[in-house]
Image (cartoon, rainbow, N blue to C red; front, side, top):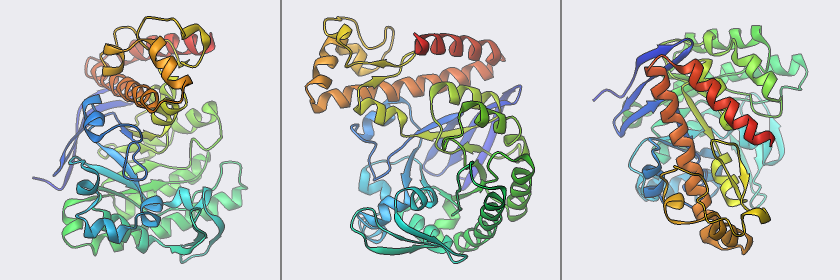
Amino acid sequence: MSRFAFSIAATDGAARTGTITMQRGEIRTPAFMPVGTAATVKAVKPEGVRAAGADIILGNTYHLMLRPGAERVARLGGLHRFMNWDRPILTDSGGYQVMSLSDLTKVTEEGVAFKSHLDGSRHLLTPERSIEVQRLLGSDIVMQFDQLVPTTSTPKAQMEAMDRSIRWAKRSREEFDRGGDHAERAALFGIQQGALDEELRKRSADSLIEVGFDGYAVGGLAVGEGQEAMLGCLDFAPGQLPADKPRYLMGVGKPDDIVEAVCRGIDMFDCVLPTRSGRTGQAFTADGPINIRNARFAEDPEPIEADCPCPACSSYSKAYVHHLVRSGEILGAMLMTEHNLWFYQRMMAGLRDAIAGARLASHARNFLDRYRAGKAA
């Protein structure tokens, strides 16, 4: 079997549907990857994640290198065996986390020096170390190490971070290629930077294409710039990347963000939103998100969402889940998270079907009108 292959089955406008084929299985695109930051998709067993329809999940270099440690995971047979997930795993490089979670971060050309948010221990994460950690974990899709700066940064800071990310992309590529057996079965993605600037994004994309990657991510968005600005960037950024490679929008997101991004040519997504929201009492539905804690659900005998086939909706009422969540019962978080994961995967399946049937425009409009009307209510 090929190490990595991406085939496009159908297009509809800028949107595409297809398949990524890897040794551990196929990934249907557009795809949403549930986030298993610390080797677990919180509140759901791996079997439940797969039952919801996920083909791939995400793990994180920063968190796993700090606890339990990449070397320990490797000694225990790799991340797949460690967490009992036998399908593809994409690992984030840790670049975002060292900038947002750690204390006393210092960025140099070598890498990022930081103190752990867990115990204050000092570490240096470089492109080479990031790739090494991902190799030790046994990642299927490895992300280059990059530097992220807020979209509110000065143009000079944005340009410097973009240029450094290109240099780090080359070092990531070189370290990945030294990976022996791992490099022969895994894939490496580059990350486009450049904030909201079309020219910087083009320079970044062209430089990454020159290095050569299996897929390309649109990085540096969903960090507070707002939906309008993000979508404005997505009007041009995906088209700057190769049409025959997967395009991955990192850290997105909200259901309406995903639908809008698919219409603009994005193939892959990840976000903590469905799991984090589930643990805090928010459920996603076709009619917008609901807060199950609200008193109006205390005696509601209906499921979280009508016509949803998930185990939570098939067997439990809003009233019961409301009781569990208000009581702080663990089962409440489990049922809410399970429903949200099913909602996201059903949403992605609907988008794939609409693209294949050349009816994405009407499907997206109907979805967005209904979802946003419910959200505004």
